[in-house]
Amino acid sequence: MSGEGLRSGQVADAAGVNIQTLRYYERRGLLAEPDRSPGGHRLYPEDAVTALRVIKAAQRLGFTLEEVAELLEAGRHRHGRRVPGLQDRAAAKLAEVDAKISDLTTIRTALAAAVEAGCDDLTVCASSPCCPIPFTDLAEENRHAGPCC
Figure 1 (cartoon, rainbow, N blue to C red):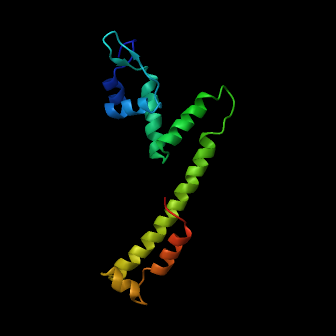
Figure 2: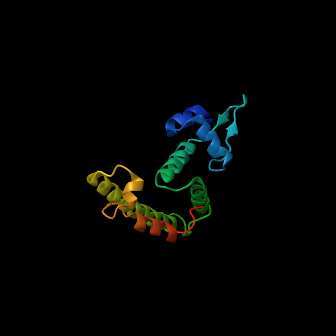
Figure 3: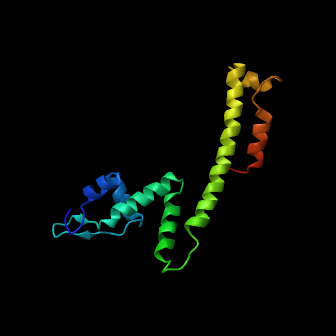
């Protein structure tokens, strides 16, 4: 690794991403456009590896690339003072995750009951009063949840 910078392949390998991902993040503005070598090769600073790792970690935590971009931008403009950013967004993301866990728990409970009861035909099961799948309740939950789009 020379003092000039790291080439695309070196950065991608060190961060555990492919070169297309690296270039995509660059196009999206998540990574600064790198300098070029006299031969035209991209030369990234070593902190580009850290930036890529941060982006990938934030994605694994459930943040979209748009949200990651906003978090990175907020971090760039702190200038030593607290800017609402990660704490507020992490709390909101935690609430989303908790809601998803609750939904998944409901789904798991219904599916486990269906497997236990030996349900084999959804249409027949839905019309049976002894069916363990709460079709009416699940339909009601979805109806009150509003449009999905």
